[in-house]
Each structure stands twice: as structure tokens, then as C-alpha cells.
Length: 323
Length: 250
Image (tube, each protein chain N blue to C red):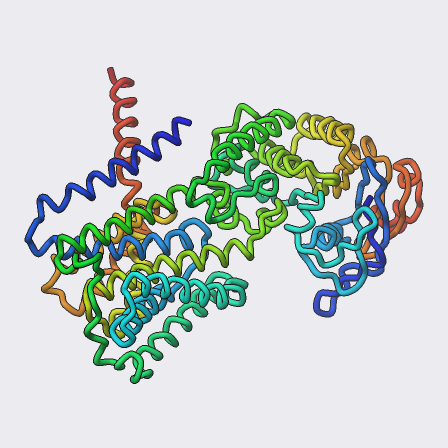
């Protein structure tokens, strides 16, 4: 029961921090960056459910993000649909696509799964570029409307911040519940030993596909939010590089931790702003970070506090021995 | 209870099992023995749905369960343990058993994410049941430990607790005494007797002859993928074919 309360407390603290943050950044450029931290948090969380908990890699997450953005964009800008409806439509379509490709794809393991999802990502990227009548190709799709409620439009950074973080907080809550449930337990069991999980009656195949679909739906929602916040989208935002960036976020933040997704997303969204001077070499820095993290802090940034505590405890014990 | 009919397994050009048939009676402790490479683990993998055999059928309580995947067999009451202990290493001992209770609970992915009211009640029920299973094998004091930190012998017991949490009608133990010391092996013998007296049929692959001869009601001997003999421990001990297979021609 105490862990139950601990989990809730952590969530409440995090939510408060999120709600208070804009006070310090109002009107500034950083608020705009924090909007993107929100979107990337959702995307990293989606991948973390799949990779960190169920242990299934996907290098095609940017495709689901892009599909959400494009379905939303096309439905509203071209066909005049309501943005909220478009978000739901995109989520449903992307969920169904993920479910359909999930069954054959998730039979694969390790490198093969990575290659298959990578292939899917590349195919989708090509479709964005080549289906000119639908997506306007490489020049991008513009004229996507903002979200609105009545006459209230989510057209400023401040409004977008609360909209996107509202979604992010809701998805974090769902994820926290999920990973602390029997389903979360079954996912970790699959991660540790798939054969043992199956022998224990866990339908590993179905569960993996379900998580894959859930991850795709989260990414699609992030895509819709992105499209209606930016009002302009182009294929370059949804390429292979971005899938790798998401992977880096999850590994740096901490595999198998909900809040690690946020840390990774925050770091990798803020870092490029700080490292402007490096320009196109940012991918090199991501790679370097990834290697350093895996070598020295495989648990991710989220483990730092507990590591410090452990070090502190050890020092105290040693201090007592000396005394 | 369990019937295996003419099971043959060919890997590439190697015949691992050839026309093996045997049956296990209800509430029996059945031993499967044989020299290394005889095909014992392969047989287990076929019975529990992990391998698809080249030919032959498996019946559980007179229903054909050939080619059913392991998760379906688990729901029908067949569980197993593994030769190289397959624990969920990063999870606690209690959580390991709670995974075993997966089939005894029903909250789906949506209900769990929304934390519907039934979910919490179910969790509490599972937790209690899991603790009872740990007590059954005698490792309740390790409930909060991370599974991969358990000593080897305790890990084996955890695997048995996890399997027993499904309320199985039959449990297949793949070399449960491997790596245990004499005392632990004796305790294991008692535990297996206890499992049987709780109404569960036991099939046991084992190298520890003393244990096998001690607790089994009947024994099947495999050699080079073929059934060599089947009978009571005494019959097996005196069977010249078995003695030859184990000791070589004199």
C-alpha cells in the first residue's frame, strides 16, 4: 500500500511542477521549447512502454508520429474536419495499422525486429514524400488549423503548453497505472524470459502487439498535437533520424521508467538549443551520449538520485567505521 | 491424465525422439530418466508446446492438445519448470509468483491503464495468493528480494512456487535437483511428495537416481531418443537393457 501512495505522490509532485513551470518562462523562448519537451515526452513514453517494459525495440516510432500528424493535417487542412475529431480519427487508424503489422513483425526478435520496424519507418517516410496530391510532398503541408473550443483557439505558446502537457500528464497517468498492474508485470516478465511468461499462461504474442498498438496510438496523438500546434508539417520531421533520437531519449532517461522518458525528452530537446553551434553534428553528440550512458549509467538519468543516495550511505557507513 | 503417442522429433537430419509413447496416471509421480542427450528435455518441450514435433500427439485428460501453445496449456492446468531456472530476474520474488497468477486475474490493458475499481481488489487477492504459494515451498521470507539475487536452490523453489500458483493439475519438473546439495535435494523430495498429495500429478526429468528411485511411482527410460523401458523403480533397476545403457556393455 505504501508503494501505491508513493506512486501517487510522485505523480502529483510531477504534475504540480509541470503546471507551475510556465510562470518562470512566460513569454520567453524557452516556453516554446517546453511545448516540444511535452510532445517528445509523450513520444519517449510511448517507446519506453514498448522497449523499456516489454523489451521490444522499434526504430519506426517516427512513422507513427508522422502518420498521426499527416492524418490530422490532411483531414483538417484539406477536408475541413474538426481538429479534435481528426486527432481521434488519426489515433484509431494508426492503432489499427500498428495492430495489423504488429502480428507478423513482433514474431521477430532483437536485430530482426529492429530492421523490420526500421523498414516500416522508411516506407512511411517515402510515402510522405511521394504521395504529392495528399501530403504536398517534401515541401510540406501548411494551413493546418489550431485546436479550438468554441471561439477559444490554442494559438499561443502558453495555450499550447497547457494543452500538450494536459495530454502528456494524462498519458503519464495511464502509463503509471498500466506498468503497476498485472499487465505491466506480464510485460516485464516477457522482457525477462518470454518462454517462462508463456508457460505461466501469459499470451505474450497478443500482449506484445497490444503494447505496440498502444505505443503507436500515443505517438499518433503526439503527432496530431504537433500538427495542430505547428500548423505546418513536412516529412523531414518524421524520418529515421528522429526515430533514433527517440531511442536516445529513452535510453538516456532510463529504460523501464515512466519519468525517465520525461528526463530523456527534456535533455534531448533542450540540448540542441544549447548546442546551436554544433549544428549538423548534433547526431554525433547523441551517439556519443548514448555510448557514455550505456557504459557508465545503464539505468539512465532517472537512477542518479538513488545512486547518490547509495554512495552517501556507503560514506556514512565508512565514516562510522572510522569513528 | 497425460498421454503421449508416437512422438517423433527431427532436428535437421538428427532424430531427437523416435516414436516415443507413454502415459501418466492421475496423481502419479512419473520419472523420466536417461543418459545425456537421450531427448528428455526435448520431450518436455514438446509436451508443453514449446517445440512443434515432427509427428505424434499429446493428450491431456483425454483431450488432444497437440500443437497448443504453452499459454493455452497453462490455462488447461499444465505447468513446468526449466532445467536452467527461468526466473523473471529483475522482478521481486513475490512479483514472479504474481505473474504465475496472471491467468487467475482478468484486468485487460485498458482496464489496467484506467485503473478500474475491480483492478485494485484483484491485485490484493493475487498478492495474498502469491504469498501463500511462497509459504508452500518455504521461501516466504524472500518475498521482497529481487529474484536474480536468490541463491540457486531458492531460485528453483521459486520456480516451483510460481508454477504451483496456477493451481495446475499436472506439473513437469525439468531436473529440479540439478545443482542442489544433498540436504536441499532431500527437502525437494519432500516438497514433490507434498505437491502430489495436494492432488497434482508430477512428471520429473532427473539425473539424481536416489531421488528418482525414492519418490517415483513409475519410471520411463529414454536412450538415444527411443523409449528403452518403463516400469516401477524396482523393475527399472533390474532391467538389463537399462543397466547396459547406463554402464555400457560389460
